Length: 171
Image 1 (cartoon, one colour):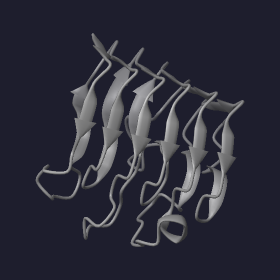
Image 2 (cartoon, one colour):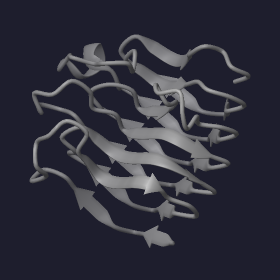
Image 3 (cartoon, one colour):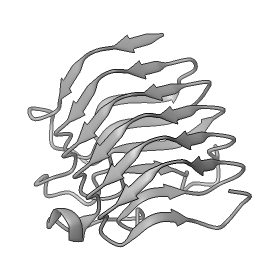
Image 4 (tube, helix red, strand yellow):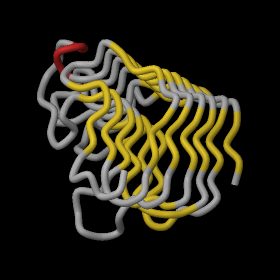
């Protein structure tokens, strides 16, 4: 399912914990989100709970979780996805992590995903000046679970970490 060339502005999205501008909850397979701008989400810009074969390509994801009064605010939160590609995205000025590929629950894990050729900068509470990050460690890229790859990214000026590898699980 292609989603191409949209401007998705969450400025008027209901201010609740977990709200995202582009949210795929349940199992989402084969979604191609590309050439879009995703901004001003009260919690996250992009959220995938589970699914495989998804592609997030050449998107501009910024200013999510800013001023929402909620803990969190990730640019891309890819929780339980597998065999997906996150490539050529510009991700910046999100309250917490820019790109998070990790599920803090036991199942489903994020497996065999590739995060490459992204520019990820000025994410994380100290960088944005907002605060209140939960489980994202204020990183540009937060990656965990099994067999995920982060390579060829430009990551700078993030709050606490550039790239944070959690639990090491074959990343």
